[in-house]
Length: 490
Image (tube, rainbow, N blue to C red; front, side, top):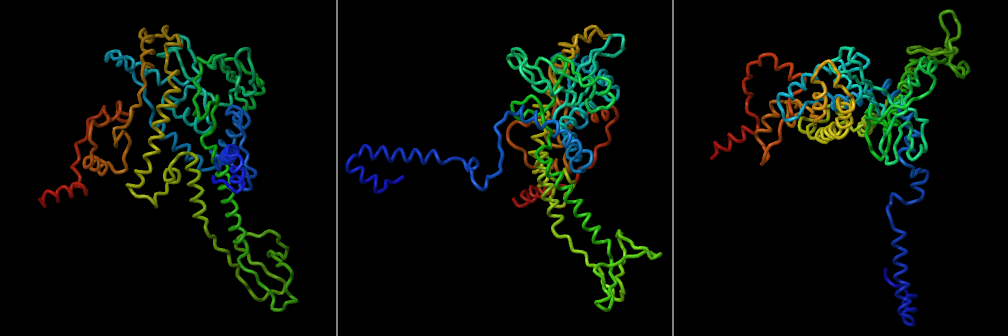
């Protein structure tokens, strides 16, 4: 910052004081400058940004966010589709754990036992292990979190492994249990020890929203050790509980619903009066048209297609409904916002492929597939890993199978997601022939990545049947024609 006339005047008498004055003014100007996003003024008036912790924010708004998100999924088709797309891509036909002990014979025995266990692992007796994965993932996306409780069974129950899994909604957590607890603490029904490790969960015996269960057992909760619970949720901050994935666009979904209802009501109102018959004399025309039925009784409610007769009416004038402008553009822009909030591509959310081609939609799905891979490996599989540790805390060695003890530990030794063999990196391609030719025409240098750790459930079923005869190779694509043209020109 240049010196002003006063600085020069002071410098002529006391140069050191003038230098300190200039440096102090520069330091003050530096402190007043900062981030525009942190500026205060007319443009940021009314912007509330509290510095509360994640647990405090979730404790205040978590239950209402879950209730509103569930209502939208029940009644809003776009919210329901977004949840379905995320679940279908994260789980698909099912994430298949496998044994990886290094001993092929033991691995086969463990995988066979695990496959037998998957059929009877549901404590409610309705789903298999892969169906439970879909339910767990759906609750994680829709409600923000879900609890999976391990239920030990007696050997007399006749199960291959005396253990089942019970899926509990987040409402089972007693959110009123918060505060200090000795050297530890309670956060919305989750008990932490002095070092911050989860020690127990306070769970209601029945769902608080179940009228019969609430009347029978009240709202009492009991302590369940943390070793028996797998808490599945996305951790965005250092938080103890999760929030619905669609929380950023709950208001956008509601506004879109309101806009469509208002537009529909407007069009229905315009369609109520088709024409009005007026009189030829101004004195004969009433302030408002009088509509009568066949018996001469006055009708005060309009219906689509009615013709209103004014008093002494002889001239007819037809209603001209106003054109609806910008409805499609507004809805498309709103759906783009909603898809961004759910982290789902617009084309998958809406099914609208009118503005994309094969190359653009493939490029647009790259980031979405990376997000799905991250959710699978860093969130879902890792959260369910304690539930798969069948022997370490489950004491299943007394089961009917003598190998149950060692097998349970080996299942939890390593978990791998068996991906489909279709498409590059295990993802299905829109056009397999074109996809294969493109990959053959342009192959990056260096070692190529593997195709995955096996096949999905459909591949295993198909492996039992003879493979069909190989199809004839499709005609060469543009890359093959270019290579052929290059050779002919040489």
